[in-house]
Length: 87
Image (cartoon, rainbow, N blue to C red; front, side, top):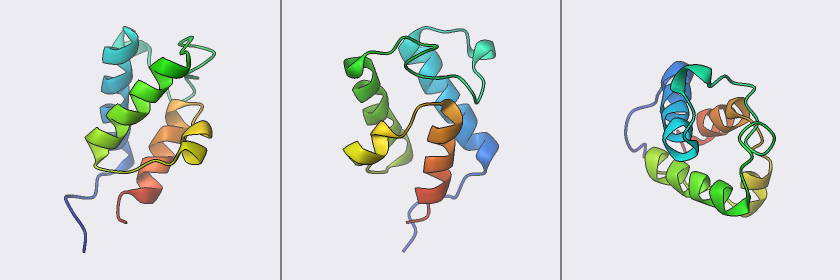
């Protein structure tokens, strides 16, 4: 059974960009798909864990530690959510 509405890629990107903007105090207009959490945002492990928790809450999803480690850019986070939102 599916919970909620399936979002398109643009909607997912916008929600993730809003999270990143709020959490990392970056201008929303400067967020692109290639933005790297660790390199461009200088996110430490605590920042990143908080972001993943926000991602899980926002999309009502569970992201394993192994999967979270593979999320380096905004696009990778968007692709992950897109691939898992209907499960």
